[in-house]
Amino acid sequence: MSKEKRVECVGKAQRTETELEVLIDDIRHTNLLSGDSNLIPQYEKALMQYFDVPHAIAVSSGTAALHASLAKIIQPGDEVLLPVIGVTMTASAILMAGGIPVFYDCEPDSFKPDLNSIEGLSTKKTRVLITVSMWGYPAIDEATIHFAKSKEWIVIEDAAQSFGTRNGSKFEGTKGHIGCFSTQEFKLLSTGEGGFILSDNSDHATAIRAFSRLGFSEEHKTFGYHSGLNYRLSAMQASLGLSQLAIAEEKIALRNKKVDLWKEMLGLTPSEKGKKNKLQLFNPDGLKGHNGYALCVKMASATEDAAKPILIKLFEAGVSTDIHRYKQSLLVNYAFLKPYYIAPQYTANPRVDFPNASKIMDSLISLPCHDGVDLDDIEWASKKVIDCLENIG
Ligand SMILES: *Cc1c(COP(=O)(O)O)cnc(C)c1O
Image 1 (cartoon, protein in one colour):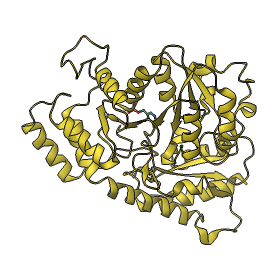
Image 2 (cartoon, rainbow, N blue to C red):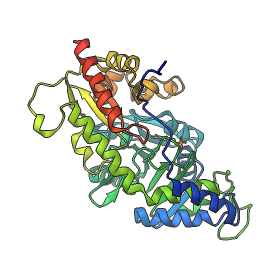
Image 3 (cartoon, rainbow, N blue to C red):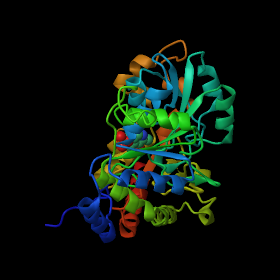
């Protein structure tokens, strides 16, 4: 009996033959397999070149990247602004570093901060603004940077999903003070587990590097000067990272082909504009320079929870979406974050506190474009999307 067809929202990253050969060769020949391997500085240098930044620190995960950065930037009790549409890991990293998460609303049709919302949340204790570029869509612009600067905040970009997204000449993750990336299996540049940090500030970079390397002091060449954890990446992961980096542009181009096919199949290309369609592109501007991580579309009529029945129907029909799989919700709805969703800043009604983000989550559908999804899959799955929309009425 043939297995029923499914399109998953995440999947194993494809490995090229070269990548695997290089990995075996590296295991044989590199001096060490630990985080002290000479492959690590090589990988970091390649990252610096790719992103055109002066500092890159390879670490063991995206969460480690966020935690190490926050641990060296904030003092316990400092407030950290983060978007209410995001992932739980960003909020966890803030808590682990002793910070207090403060949730902000986004713009009506993008993941960028709504600056009015932020202004109202700003206090004497605010130290950091975090942006999260979900599904590869840009979450930071000049206005955001300008605003943060006027407040003397440190800007940390959680760019875990936006490796390779670029807006003009600058990559997502290089616009603020610190960029945190994940190279976990499901991310665009995949090393199984892993992450890295980018910064243009040598003080930040030195402190974060020491923290992620058991507190090792580069200056004194020994331990004992700083506290720290072991967040090092292994040589095997750095080997994969180097190979993946060499084909990053190809990977991005391939994903963008998938984005284009979704758009075409769902009637979302410019030529179909004006046609009555139950779906629309989310943040079409955000697709310029997009890495093709996933395509976000939205229901044209954004009634309360409009997308939910579609996401469930899609899952049952064999098309899995991130939003369904991860039970994606506004962060304030997660149990462990409820204690931080309190008056006087908030009314306890997310639709009042985060009107834009609420509307986005009411209507958003994320469509997968990862290595494991091929063009035939998208043709098949987009028919399922259209079916589900028809049947919902
Ligand atoms: C994946 C992800 C993380 C966590 O990265 P890990 O490598 O899994 O620790 C953090 N933030 C965002 C936005 C992510 O997508």
